Structures are given as structure tokens and as C-alpha cells.
Image (cartoon, rainbow, N blue to C red; front, side, top):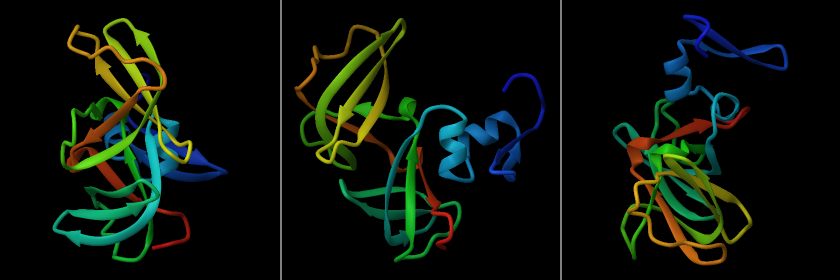
Length: 162
């Protein structure tokens, strides 16, 4: 991503998105682009309501909110995408976007720790957390919840639905 001013991301011979590296990373046009350019947590669901620039989506893991740059309407299938570095470990019953499960693993990466939480249906979500000594002692199998603010997540259309 550092070798050019503009990048085209293609899938099956079709251009998915053209833009700067920053724009493609921060505002992917599709879940494919989001997972092709960096790691992303992607959860499928259906839009249940909209409010201004945000929309709510009902997933197998409960209701979640995110930005709605495509103007998705209530009732359409959607994918919520959130980058691991925008997620955080939640304490107790913190309100807002919450994905609860059990710790699958902790990957120590120097200044960061990747916390992987397995949800009830087997879906894995990842949070990239600062390894600054403030993290609680977590081990595989212990309960944990990952959260993120609505402005950190994007609701994206599912191919063929609109």
C-alpha cells in the first residue's frame, strides 16, 4: 500500500474500489475490500433501523450499530465491518456494541496484543490492544467481551441486496 498514490482493488476481474491507501483502509466499499486490505471483523445481519448517519443491524450476536455510508434501508441484508484496532476489551456490562464470548487466544505482538474471542456460534472476533501493562490477566477459555463505538464500524451492503 505504500508504493502508489492510488490503488485499485479487484475481485474476479471487477474493480471493487479505487482510491488512496488510507481511503480504502478506512472506508472500504465492501466486506471483500475490508478483508483484502488488512484484518477486519465482519458480522452478517439485517438492518433494523436508521438514525442520521448510523444504522442498527441485528446479527446472530445481538443488535449492533455502525455508520451507514451507503444509506442502507431497514430490512436489507448487511455486513458490519470493524477493524481490530478500533475494538476494546469491555469491563462488566458496559452498554453499546458488545460481542461476548470466551477467550480463544492471545497473540503477543510486542507493543500490541491481539485478543481473539470466540462467540457462541464459533465466530471469532479480534481486538488489537495496547500491551501497556494495563490488560487484565486473560487466558483461553475465560469469558470476555469486545466492544466498539458505532463510529468505528461500517455497515456495508451484501452483494445483490440493496
